[in-house]
Image 1: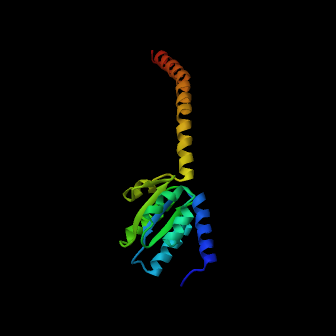
Image 2: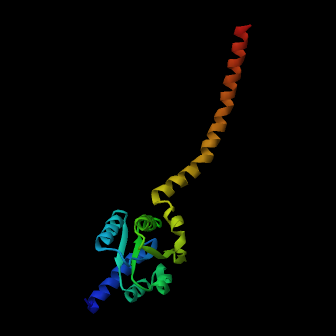
Length: 175
């Protein structure tokens, strides 16, 4: 079914809006997957906060033109679905990596982070990127470590004094 000009404009505007607020994008080939499998992917993606859309390549190029993901334009060939991570950079990679494990015909062909293309073989590295909450907890642990070490060192001085006095007391009682 052919799309009207207004429908094409709507699709381009929607994808462009999502792309402007996304942290990462992946283009994957879905040739050979059934409708049920694609529906399963969309459900998993929606639960993870990932936007998934099958868009014609010419419309995708127009939508991505003024975004950080314009670097993907040359790789938009063949039947591709676009997935955008809107919560954290690794969310889209985690969803698509898990889906690709169970479906051999599903292949990741393009990965873009911060305006740069990443080799598709590095999807594991992208998937292991921390979520926002994990990154904050790692930052807090790094910030807390020196203070905690200083407090432990400062506490060691009176602790050592108490242990020395206790040892002298025990020695006098034993004598």
